[in-house]
Length: 126
Image 1 (tube, helix red, strand yellow):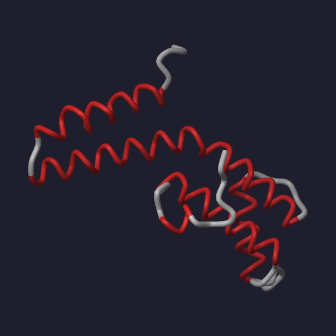
Image 2 (tube, rainbow, N blue to C red):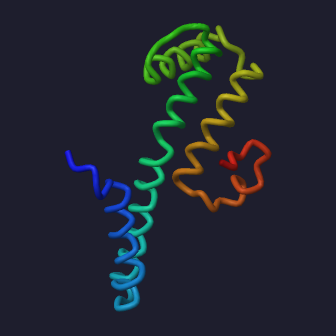
């Protein structure tokens, strides 16, 4: 596998081409779709940059909350099961913290300029 350029670098170059060179030449519906494409590429880049870390942190929080090991998928299924069967209270502080941090991580990838994220006391600054 090639080391250079990375997937992130390739996607960034494509996004920059769309934004700087293609979009100024486009109008109407085509310009709108170019903006959508550039935004989708930006989301993919953020997912590549932040997604693994967010998933590892979510898995660790769930392991602590549920007091068991497992994959992120298994732990999320167990969380749902425990909530459905009232084995875990909806007002559990650990659950609230996990859901808040998971949501913030998802929003940071999908909509990093969302005002609620920018003003959150739990927002990651690194």
